[in-house]
Length: 82
Image (cartoon, rainbow, N blue to C red; front, top):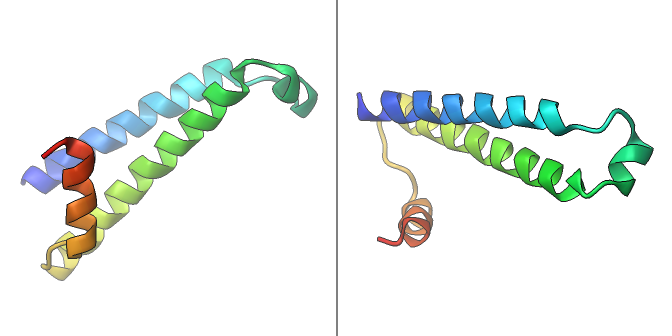
C-alpha cells in the first residue's frame, strides 16, 4: 500500500503543479517569450513530467511485481540524500 500512497501523493503534486501553471501561464506566445514567468512555466512543466514519470514507474514496477532497475534506485537514493 505504500506504493499506492506514494502514487496518490505524486498525483496530488501534479494537480498542484498544473493549477499553479494555469494561474501564471501567459495568454499567448509573445507574452510568454517576454515574461519573467517563462522559467517558472518551464520549471512547472518539468516537475509535472517528473511526477508523471514517477507514477508510471511505480505503476509499471507494481504490475510486474519487480523492483525498479538498480540504476533507478541509485538515482532516487542520490537525490534523496540517502
